[in-house]
Amino acid sequence: MQSHEIDYEIHGSDMQMVEIELDPEETVIAEAGAMCFMEEGIEFEAKLGDGSEPDQGFFGRLWGGAKRAITGESLFITHFTNAGNGKQKVAFAAPYPGKIVPVNLDEVGGEVLCQKDAFLAAARGTKIGIGFSKKLGAGFFGGEGFILQKLSGDGMAFMHACGTIIQKELQGETLRVDTGCLVGFTSEVEYDIEQAGNLKSMMFGGEGLFLATLRGTGTVWLQSLPFSKLAETVVTHSSSFLNIRNAVDQLE
Image (tube, rainbow, N blue to C red; front, side, top):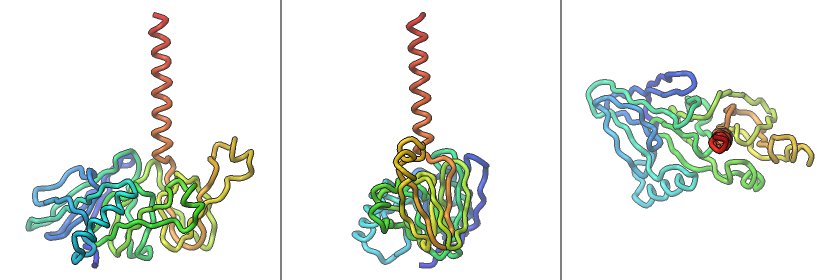
């Protein structure tokens, strides 16, 4: 199915939202709970499927939802359709500070693999599936397990990630990345993991035991602050603050 053509604008710098303009009967699909606002002519419905295969039966859609649930995402995808006469807008935002990455799938070979919670929204016609890591080592130690999200199609898709985002173009090169900093990559890029230096470096270098290795020719998107590190820092600082407060209360 050919994807709907949508216009969009990204607002903000560090806590962004994407505003999508829909012509009549155009539809955008989004992760459950991502919507910020929608104009009067927009109607929405939670569905099991992504709408990329209209003739797919109930059990096919159920299986598709189950595969998404394996990646930790919602069983349902919300479809937002312009049911009015003129252009209408709907906006989506990520659940944590960071950037929204617009990707024209038609320009990157029709397929992107991304971390399991990176999908935000896409034009109807985009297929949202799962991609298994090819290497056993990548499955066990790659940070995202065996399963990555796979976005396929020829329209616009939007990923979100934490911190600052950079886009690197590999030309037959090898790039080693902290496993948590990898947002996504095009399907031509080979993904694997490797040991992070010698035993001393692994234990005391602070970079973890393994690094993600990306080889080949294609596009890679990286984030400066993995959400897991942000959450760990918040929890650690909150715990330290509570310990100090308890100590002060005891002195009083």
